[in-house]
Image 1 (cartoon, helix red, strand yellow):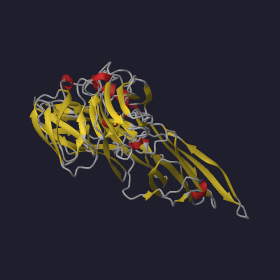
Image 2 (cartoon, rainbow, N blue to C red):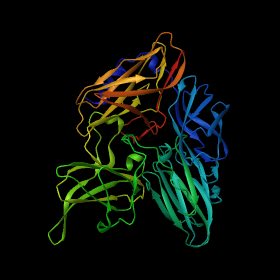
Image 3 (cartoon, helix red, strand yellow):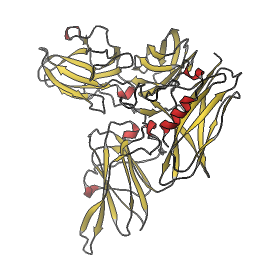
Image 4 (tube, one colour):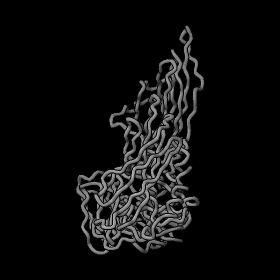
Amino acid sequence: MTLRPLALLWSLTLPAAAQLPAARLDAVFPSGAKAGTEVEITLTGADLDEVKELHCSHPGIKAAHVEGAKFKLTLDASVPQGLHEIRASGRFGISNSSVFVTGALPEITEPAANHTRSTAAVLTLPVTVNGTADADASDFFRFKAAKDQAVRLDCAAQRIDSPLNATLSIRNATGLELVRVESTLDRDPALTFTAPAEGEYTAELHDLAWAGGAAHRYQLTVSSPQESPALPTPVPMAGAVLALPAATTEEKEPNDADSAAQPLTIPAEVSGKLDDDWFTFSGANGQAVIIEVLSHRLGEPSDPFIVVQKVTKDAQGKETSSGAGEFDDTAGPGGSEDFRLGTRDPSGRIVCDEGVSYRIFVGDRFQTGGRYRLRLRETKPDFTLLAMPQSPATNGKNALRCTPLLRRNGSAAISVAVLRNDGFDEPVSLHVEGLPADVTAADTTVPPGLSSGVIIVRAAADAKPWNGRLQITGKAGDRTHNAHEVTPRWSVGDSIAERLDLRLSTEGFMLAVTDI
């Protein structure tokens, strides 16, 4: 049984109220601002009627309602650079989260009339431009550069929950295209351009398929390579639910040759940058060791892989190495396809021999230099949980960003994926905590062999308006784990034909109740 038949079965029994409006936040524009400044933002989405309150994940971001869908954000100077989450609440409940970026450089908003080279927006570097792509149109930006001057251009779109699949090119003063890139950082383009002569240059940006709209936001940062800010830590992807300990061993350079492999002791957790790294370890005879890398699941645009060598020495100390394993992409568990848990991160298992050492090579096919964590651990049967609300109006193919909204006598469905690790196959009992007194959710059990279940949340006939955070827990024997909320980075009408990325929410699972 898979999750989609469960979703379909529930959709056939949904009351008519479930098809009524529910707040959905598709975009916040501008998409970011520099810490220590103020900015007026506009919300776009669906059913944002009477929205007068924003909920920001960082306490240093304060919101004041201006009018309609406009708010003024005040960012404290102490707000760290990076991605933060914003939700809106109004007549039709509390929305899903949308990403807002706190930057380090001056920021501007692209002018409306920059769709030709002659009307290109003039940039003073360094700068971050907040823009939106229009259908069948390009955005143009003009900047000056001296001969041999290096200029870094980085377009963040996917990283900020935008469906924009951007193409970025640079032309000289005569209109000759000098360079064009796309999908440099996953599907976000970035390049370092060296000016062949002193003069003016024009950057052109558009969607690869010439799509556009308010949700197709981007942040284009143009600066010298030295001034270019570090990429913000991405919001983890849906599969990044393994517990990440705060204390890790740092990768120690130089370890880019097998002769300089960094020694590790099981268990080990190493943090580093993907640049061809070697490690070495030994295990007890018959000891099973799980070797895995987290990078793509951490939101990095990487494609890591692992090569394991078995190293022996003869009586004279002569070393001989042989292949012990190669690990690549990891498929998602069957029955949880809607959660998009397949990942480019590698994982595998080896069984150690006595008196033998092992070397691990960690590489990246995309050569991104992105963050990664290498984990060596003994097998430990256990489970983790993901939770995602089912769309309030579904045709079986769409995937909408949403938060459950309950009306009196109404119901909502929450899909829960049970990730079974290292052979764990016990029944998992699901339970919801934090509900108001007039809302209930019956416990349900996911039996052995299945990877998903559905929780039904119901409101009483006299339920009172409420917004709050739930906690969904799973229990199996003496193990109890909390579920992590999953949300689409953007809404799609056909999750089979269109690209759909799912990420974790950092705030927990939200629910709204209305008396409308």
